[in-house]
Image (cartoon, rainbow over all chains, first blue to last red; front, top):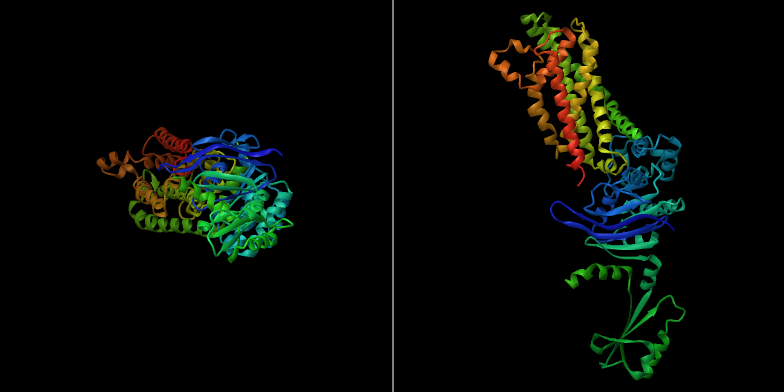
Length: 311
Length: 253
């Protein structure tokens, strides 16, 4: 697949000296859905704003389908649609007019059938003649998406599309993103909901303090997440893993009071029964047995906290 | 040049005007009528004629200029400030358009609205006084130039303003006094010599004088000076807009 968006060594420092982006590198393939996860203030919105032309990069290059966002900004920006985090809409304007405006603003001639199609897909057609101030919060978010799609972009940025929306609407948003993928639209969404990344993304990037810490296939991440850990707590303290249990690749934890066993929860045989039988056979007394699952959240938290630990 | 985008901004801004068409039109018509009643009837009955023109007719160009200047500024400043205030500016900044195109859309719409209201006032004044326009082409040209240059000035204020108070500040504290003291309701020649000299520093004097010349052929300052004045003012505004465009001042961080 071709790279549609290429970000190379992108830096952004604000006038006060704050460095919001510290050399971001990211290549995004055409047609994929990528979720950028990160805590508040990680630089997610700055990254999007810089790519979309709202803020100017301090250094680095960004190209959209080969067009540089500064030197060929007209071509680059006409390929991008942006759904901002905050609801920002002209309150007294009609839904259909504001979508038409967006289409025109991005240089596409008036085409009522295209606007109608977008409004219908976003369940806004019945509300087309309503003033925006009359709409509910969820409907307003849909209008923002409709505006972003009005010029038929190839790349869509969704900045925290489901922040503060109810479960039903969130599911609807995910469906919309799925539909767009079917049309070949590349979607980049930022979120701090891990389940959102899990539900719709092909790849997940983790961003923190202006740096991309990891970009990985969601399935690879999920596989890592599929690891489970069994803690066998003992009544006696051990110095080393007993030889009879050497085959299990166990670790000692809790100062020798716990045997730790990692296994793949998706595997046909987890080996737990055999392990527990062998532990019993070795004469060790069990105090308790605990299982734990490492989640994307654990991976995320450990990644995000790493720089601090190193400092 | 992205004409589609300029047109989109223009149409969207004009829609705002037509949404509030009643108040957009009734308010200037009402205030003009009041000016005629108060200045024309009450004061005019004592002044009779200024430079050979009946006082009621004499104030018409000044009244139009007064309204057109304040409307041009307020329309354009509000037009660009409002997207900043409600956050919809993101769309302008992320669109494949240049700053020049943004300016053309917003300033074009603001100037059109001001022009529209100026013409409404002219029509209203026909009901009160007898006016003959000696040089209609020059009148229209002056009107367009004033609308555009003050809309440009308003656009700059709208970009600069950080809150609604600042948005009102320049029009209220600088423009309104300059316009009132610029000879809207009197001829500069009626003032004591000291004030005549001071008035020469007021740019609005040149615009009103030129506009009045187009109506009646009378002028406080030579018409050429008036033309130079408006050219200088427009150039200054264009220069400021160009600088904003270059630096992204208050728009793009």
